[in-house]
Length: 425
Image 1 (cartoon, rainbow, N blue to C red):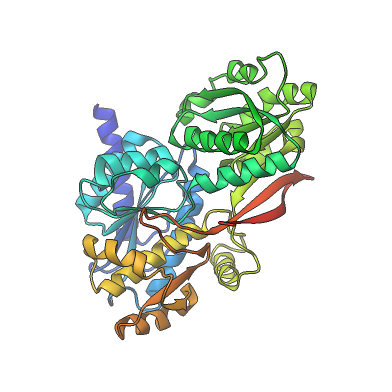
Image 2: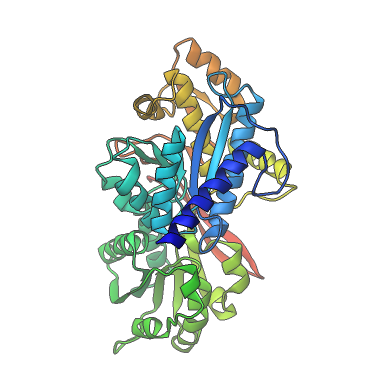
């Protein structure tokens, strides 16, 4: 117990030092020391351990948005500040961090990455404490059904859309018999369940449905997935495709699955969590030659996304913004605009105005039109924030209602976007 408490306080101390010193923990560069009257937003994502790549790039996008807003005068004539605490992808630590953030005085929390962590934070901390929690990456449908008193929002679409598009694409490619493999949590189970439901509705068949335990990063190197992989093919007739919803363990699983895929001439489709460079660089070559996947997608020809991409590249030395970073960027702008619309940082006001500043009615504004948006709000006019990640019109559950998914494959060691599908159709 003592070691866990020490870890929690160490995480809090690091975050506080970040604010006080003005040191960008992501890049190591120096930024302006923030004044005492800063409006502080919490960031609860893994900055080390499993899923840390997703957490680190989310922090980059969030930091970019905060720096842009501060350069234009801040919010309510006060600067924004970020309190990032490392959850390490651990639910208990994430819950403790969220509670500590609230005690420290944050006005809202952005996080988490994993749906199971987001739901844990919400159910254990933010709902009871009436704190806005907005996730840029958690996609499980279970989030939509939580009794959250309008405290839980997200800027990424529910997996009900991804599952439907993945099932339709698999069926269109001629697959009729599938087995499924997923991590046993809110993300993997519900995404797979929705995929199966859609695939069966189209007329396909489902053979084996296999799930494996959600692992800590320290457990991954010593864990074997061979038994779980073998179950996928444990029937009289082999499937013609395997659908997978995995995290960073995908690379290890790919090596253990590849011999079966090759022997049985089986295709494979994966979810958005595998659309990462560490998967691309470490997965089995046979697996990569067969894999296709889905990922939420910002249209490259969209001017709003182009502006975000240019700003991200300038801020991070030419680096292209990874997938699912614009959602973190948009989360900051939505919170900032809601505060401006409310004239307050009060949670109850934020809950009301988050939906109002994102439309669908009102004057369309983008991140690059911050000054215009503020002028409109201060003259009591409605605005409709159009995000770098796409249109963000929230429904009654705090979910976005439209967007795009890309269908991707791997060619010559790189991700290739084959097509883009909109939802709803």
